[in-house]
Length: 155
Image (cartoon, rainbow, N blue to C red; front, side, top):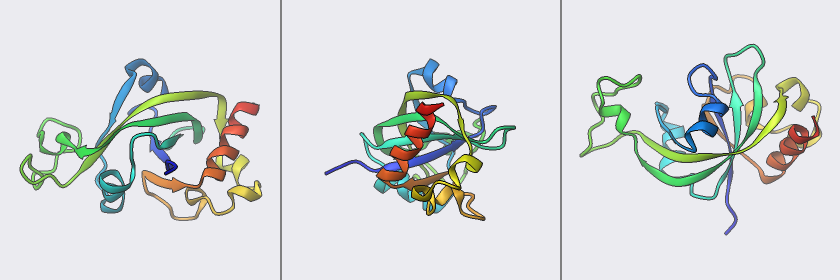
């Protein structure tokens, strides 16, 4: 069975693509949305491909790719009161939140911005480009993934 494709958002001041390259493998933790939690727990699997998207920065957009290298498991930052995103309702015995592990793939020479993606017909249904989308992880199709990679490598 073929893997799936996803877009993961991060603020570069919180965790950048360069941080991922430096770390080698990273836990994608801190998600506190139930829809995204369900994907992390049930749908996002080892081998899936990721578009790494910068949000809340001067130039937003996709900066590179990554690969999921670990299936979903309980997010231990939820029960750590010293973490940036604790949730006292989540415990090791009854975890609420999940995370996956990812590794860096290709770094694009320049960011592929939403303004560059919107006119591309193959990206017309891309969730991240829809008005009001605020999810930190969204599914993408294989075609959307491939088109964005071509745009990123063509720069």
